[in-house]
Amino acid sequence: MSGLLKIRDADGNIIEIPAIAGPPGPAGERGKGITIDNIVESELNGKRSTTITFSDDSEITINDGEKGVDGYSPTVAISNITNGKRISITDKNGTKTADILNGTNGKDGAVGIGIKTITIEEV
Image (tube, rainbow, N blue to C red):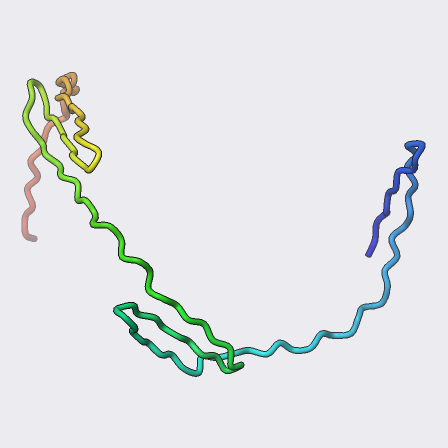
């Protein structure tokens, strides 16, 4: 390790102490992996759960969550309006609309070069 350790004393002076590297420590023990030994699904009083047992004899039980409320599917409608279309989206909070108006015609393009006729003859 290299560098300096900087310490500020009570008077505001900075004292620099060179960093000293010690010898490396011993290697750590190799970690032990675990595997799944067993998976059991069960149901009690209409509630399902899954219990997973690992090779180190630890286990975890995962219970089904509570049933959620019914969802709401939004609807989309497109209608004609003067000079464009109206998009209406209705969800549980009401209807929102956006009008998409037709654009104006662009300028005419430049005159093109034209097409030349090419005749291919057999030789």
